[in-house]
Length: 500
Image (cartoon, rainbow, N blue to C red; front, side):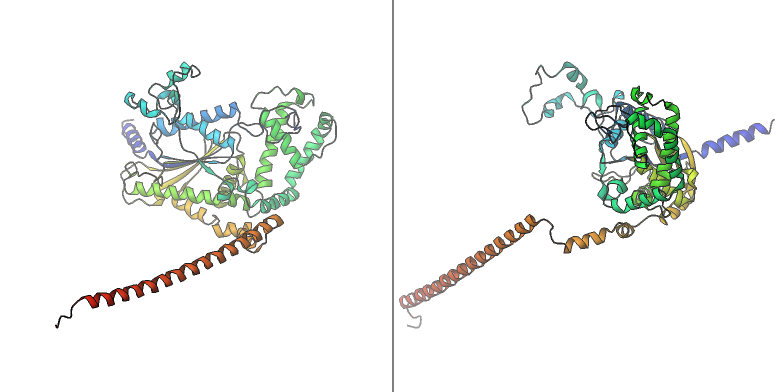
């Protein structure tokens, strides 16, 4: 017992000394709860289970609240627990990306309100002597009775009501080949070909379609009052409508008439989505779609991770120089995406790091994957990439931890270069075709010919005028020379000869 106590103290001391230090974090999350993307009846705005929504595909209040809570959780983890991020928003610490759809933009905006909540007064402030400087160059009467007292009171010294914090969000469109490439981007035809082949070949997907027809086909025939083609696309829309209504606690009065038990159908739709994304959308042998979606994003993650590690190796991790328009060393990278983009990232990792399909987790609304790059909090010098770790979380489950050296080595072998992407999608061929391709629109060709004729006439007129102008200059020059010679002769006749 006497020996046990000092041994215990040594163990505790070593544990304290070897505390992990956060170096860099990347989170990639799905948007929150939303309305269904496709309506069954476009005239009354009802979906495939006859629920009505205001706007297809848009984030709901439930979805906003989901991300506010996710931001609050991340504040506790990355600000309150270890002071990794500053308590007040710092634009040099966060690099925020979103796909260019409303639901992802609003999701990350909602999450940022949880990460930097207004109530703790972290927004920008205005001094009383600066008040006059805040008026824009338009006519605005602040005593206008239409401006409520609540707005005036919520401002006070806050730059924005309730001390709201505004953070820049960078949009990633399809053409940048980073997010949502396969279903909206320029490589759409190639990707649809892959998905079509998968849907025809995968037995597991055929089995679940047969299960739907056997279990629910007759009930949905009665529900729609006609027979439908219950293929993969139709089941996708039915499950999308159901799983959108479920977290909203909608009564589903019409759906109840089918006699299908809600929890049973939710279980079916959950399983269907897992197969749909893991096997059908991402199931081709070469994981082409996952590479298209994730390669450039993974390159960016590795780049920023390296920047932060180099700062730590130099002992400058908390004291690096920040310059205007220099956001090259962020502490945290946030990606607001979709179930497609998160799934692709997972599949990419599975292949690159050698995990099987059991590693895959379907991302529900507001699900988050996180890469936390850590090292031991010690004064060790001469660190290498073996001293840093990439810890991968799905929501709060730690799925793997690997040294940065191994992570980069394995990932780089699977990242597609721009040339790989161009060859796969035929981007270079399309450019060549566009160069040689005549305009298909005859009106455009007529306009081109008309413009070409006008340009020729303008060129002829310009050359003619230039020639006339040159001739006039030459004539004037000759006349000027003659006048000078004449003046010289007169001058010489008036000046006496110096030898006289």
